[in-house]
Amino acid sequence: MAERRQLFAEMRAQDLDRIRLSTYRTACKLRFV
Image (cartoon, rainbow, N blue to C red; front, top):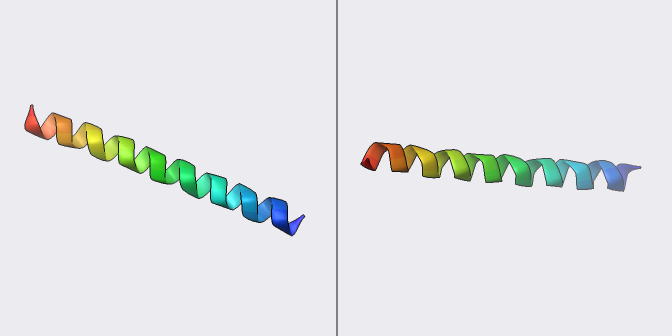
């Protein structure tokens, strides 16, 4: 059970990093345009 919870937390962290990267890219694009 604990392992599954840790895996879920890691997946959630990866999703957050992905969202942060996408928002950062869009912000840079908007800033340069």
